[in-house]
Length: 223
Image 1: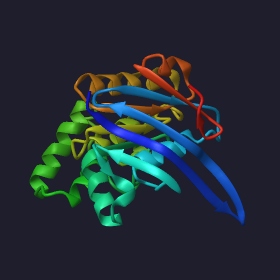
Image 2: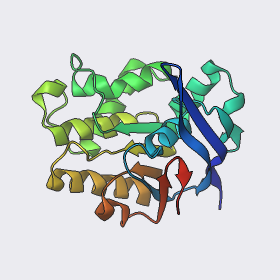
Image 3: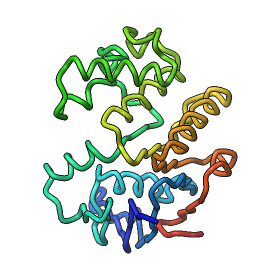
């Protein structure tokens, strides 16, 4: 199987008011193309830090991180941004939508840095919003949408550049159980179509639907 993600002895430390905090203490794992993997662990275990490093939002203090055989720890900031824009889509617990932009404009945003004219960008954004069931909410601002609708916009935005990897950090954390279930079903459908999906979650019911669970505790792989 093709490996799309590899972490090799990854460590991450932060200096907080001259106190060194070790978020990751040397974790190693691989994710194959098309897998659905849940990352679990208690609060402060390092699982969100691991997700940020996989998505190249942060770099490790030590160790190596490969996305499709490219060692991102060796890349320049601009090349990291290019790789992230093309290969990885992010879904966050807090949605991270721009409140002054419509749903359509939020989804179009990641495409501004890709080689696609504005007409095609808008058409693709419309198609993605229809895919997540929001064809009648395209011109609404995020404050005018429910939590579930905002998360659907965030998923459409994450798909804007046809990423091969979706990273979802507690994507149902701010949603009720019914709406959260709908979001997970949407991620499962994307996975069935071949997208590699990693989900950080506290929810055992969500984790059970993954093909594999990686548990992180105290910055180490517990199992």
